[in-house]
Every structure is written in C-alpha cells, then in structure tokens.
Amino acid sequence: ILVLVLVLILVLVWVLVLLLVLLLLLVLVLSSRLLQAVCINAVRGNPDSVIAAIDHFCQNQEWAMNVGDEKGAILDSVVMETSPSTVLELGTYCGYSAVRIMRLLPPATRFITLEMNPDYAAVARQVIQHAGLQDKVCLVEGKSADLIPKMADMFGIRTFDFVFFDHWKDCYLPDIRLLEDCGLLDQGSVVLADNVLCPGAPEYLDYVRSSLRFSSRFYRSHLEYTRVLDGLESRTQTGPGSHCGRI
Image (cartoon, rainbow, N blue to C red; front, side):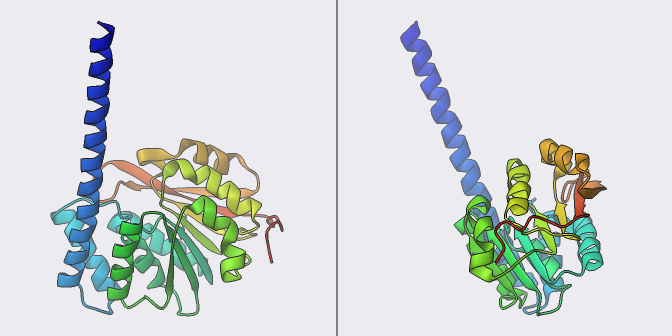
C-alpha cells in the first residue's frame, strides 16, 4: 500500500510539473502573439497606436497581464501629477506600461525598467522599439533584489521620483524596503503598485498604510480587461530617505 501511495504521489507531481510547463509555454507563446498584433496593427513610432493595438488584442483576442486600459488611465494621471525626472519600473513584461509611462515624459527623463524573464524582455524590446522609444527606455534583465542595490553604480541615479511595481506580488514588500535601505527613495518619491487586490499584496499594503513616513492612496479599479475588483496603491514619501547606498 505504501508503495502504491508513493507511486500515486509521484504521478501527481509529474502531472503538476507538466501542467506548469504547458502553462509557461502558453504564456510565452501569448507574448509572441501580442508582439505580432503590435507589428501588424500599430503605427511604427506611435506609442499611442502601440497601446491601442495591445488593448484591442487583450480585449478581443487573448487576455494578457498588462496594466490595461482602465488602470492605465490611473497610471497616466499619477505619472503626470508626479512629473518625474527619474523612473524605475519593476516588471516590464511585454513593454506596455513602459510605453505608456514614457510617452508622457520628456526625452531627458531617466527611465529604467527591470524584467527577470529573458523571453518577456526580448518581446518588450521589440514593442518599445516599435513605439519609437528604444533610445528613451533602458531595459535591464535580472532579479529586482539583485539589481536595485546596483542602481547607483550602474546608472549614477541618486533617487527615483517615481517607481511602478508590477512584478511578483510577494516581492513588493521586500523590494520597497530594499529601495529605502539603498537610499533610492526620498521626500516626494511616489511608488505606485498594481494588483494590490488581485492577486493581492496584503503585507505590502499593511506596510505602506501603517507608516507615518508615507501618505497612501488607493485607486479602486478592475483587473486588466475584466470586471474583477482590483486597484492600485500609491505611496508618497513625506520625509527624507536614508542616505545609505547613495553616491
């Protein structure tokens, strides 16, 4: 009986592994189809056309985990209110939000976006290039935990005026703490986090809402291209940051 149970467990594990591999392959193929939709339907050199092409693809053909049109409008408003000169994005995915943010900012803006998945990064570079923003957006491959401490040395940036979180949700809390510890956030720095309700980032929300060093605001919305309740949380630093890690 014990042997039979062990065999069943091994079979279940293999089935789960196969399902995860298939899911990953579907997601990677999806990013390629999204890129194809951009190349076919978007006007080269026109960021708004690229955004519209991706939104149309996600609304009418296949769902993808971009910030989307509804929350994208909120992102636009926060970016314009902040008017940042230095921007950091965690989680490039296919480049949708990078295009969305950078199209609103002057060419002199320092924009750095981090993506740990090389396949997504490859698609994002082509999407950003199709939008004509390849000289304005710096895409770096790697894990946020590894790259955040290197921002000052790699780019000579003292602090970021605006940071957009749209990567793994369990990284939100350690990454905002890391940004603080490295002195990359200062008074007035705005951090906007997506998907704080779905799939959710409860520990991150508790942290930013309970600290007297931040003012926090929740933007009620829906999960991209659905009617599922979601939202974004902005956190503005109300006092000076740490000087640790600055150049």
